[in-house]
Amino acid sequence: MNFVTTSFVIFFLPVLCIGWGLRRHYKAYTWFLLGANILFYTMAGVAHLPFLFLIAFINWGCVRAMERKGRRKRLLLVSAAVAAHVTVLAFFKYYEVAALWVVEQMGPGVQWLINPYLASWVLPVGLSFYSFQGLSYTIDHYREDGLAPRSYAQVLCFLSFFPTVMSGPIMRENNFFPQLRTSFAGEEDFPEGIMLILSGLFKKVVMATYLQSHLVDGVFAAPDEYSSAAVLMAVYAYSVQIYCDFSGYTNIAMGVAQLMGFHIPKNFDEPYRSLSLQEFWHRWHISLSTWLRDYLYIPLGGSRKGNRYVNLMITMIIGGVWHGSSLGFLVWGALHGAGLVVVHAWHRWTTGCQLNSRVLRLLGRITSWVITMHVVALLWVFFRAETLVDALAVFQRVMAWVPEGTGFPLAVLVATVWGVLLSFCGTSLYRWAVRGLSILPWAVQGVVAGLVVALIMNFGPDGILPFIYMRF
Picture 1 (cartoon, rainbow, N blue to C red):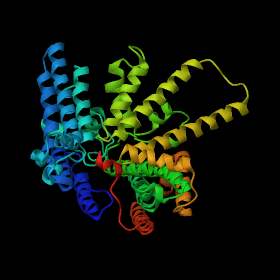
Picture 2: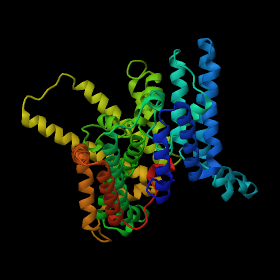
Picture 3: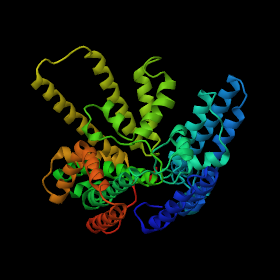
Picture 4: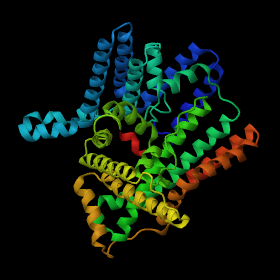
C-alpha cells in the first residue's frame, strides 16, 4: 500500500486512535499492532503473505533452537539461517534471469518457467528489507547470549511493522521491542511526526514525481532524442529524484511511527553535502550501510583483518546485487567499492598532512564536494538505467555534446538545485517548522497539516508514481 493514497489514510487513522487507547496494555497492543501490520501487508499483496510468515518463522525458530546450545551448534544454526535467507532472496531476485537463461538453453519446452502467473510471484513486497531485519535479530542473539528469545508473534510483529516493512529503514531488535513496551507518543511527537510526514510528501509528490515525469523517464527511455545538455540535466535530476523519493518515504515512515510513539532511526543525513564517498555512505541509506558494515564488512575482517580493500569491494558488490539482478546494480556497487578503496587509500597516504592556509582548506573542501557529488551522480546512471547498454548510451550522448534534440523545462533546473540545497539546509528548515507548529494548539496543528497536504497534492503532478525502493 502506497503511503500517498486515500486508502492508507483510511487504514491509518483508526489504527492510530485505537492504538493510543491500547498502548498501556502491552499484550493487547502487541496483538492489535500485529493485526494492523498483517492487514497492511495483505492490502499490499496477499499472495506474498506466506513469505513474511516464513522469514519470521526461520528467525524465531533459529533463535529458539540456539537456547542452551554450545558455541559450535549455535554457529551451525545461525549459518543455516543465513543460508536460508540468501537462498530465498537469490531465488526471487534472480528467478527471472535464471528462467530466461534456461529457456534459451533448453528451448520452448520449458517456456512455462516464465509464464505470467509465476512472474507475479517474483520478489514479494519488502522481502529485501524484512529479510535483513530478520537476520539482524538472529545474528544479534547468536552474538549476545544474554538476549531473551521472543515469541513468534513478537518476531512477526517486529518484521511486519507497517511503517517500515515495505522499504525500511531496517530496524534492529533493540530499536523496536523496548519502544513496543514502554514508548508513548508525547506532546513533542505530534508536531514532529506531522512535519516529517509533510516533508516526505513534499519531497515525493512535488519534487521526485515532477522530475521523474518531466525529464528523467523520457531521457533514460530514449537519450538519443534529447540534447546532450538535457541528458546531463537528467543525470543531475535523477540524483535529486532518488534522494527525494527515498528520503521522502523514510520521512513519512518516521512520521507515521512517531505519531504512534515509535522513534525510527534516521536513514538519511543530508547525503549530498558529503565531501567523500566514505562520508556519503555514512549519510545515505544509513540503515542498510550500517547493516552491511556490522553483519558483512566487520565479520569479513573490516579494516583489521585480511585486506580492508578486498573487504570493501566485497561489501559494496553485495550491496549492489542486493538491489536486483540487473548488471547495472553490480557495476554500481563495484564502482562505489572502488571509489571507497581510493578514498581509504588517500586518507592513509595523507594522514598527518594539513593545509595551513584557510583559503586552501576551503578550496579543498569545495573541490572534494564537487568531485564527490559528480561521482555519485554519474554512478546513479548505472542504478537507474534498465540495462548496461542503456547506461552507456546516456554517457555517450553526454560525451558527444550534441545540441540538437529535446531540451528540458527551466522548472527542472530549479527543482534540481532546490533538491541539492535540501542537503545543506533541510534539517534546519525542519527544526524551524517544528518549532512554529509546536506553539499552535493541537486542533490548529491538525488543520494546518490538512491545508498543507491539500496544497502539496494540488501542486503535485496528476498521478503519484510508486516509490522507487518499493521494487527492492
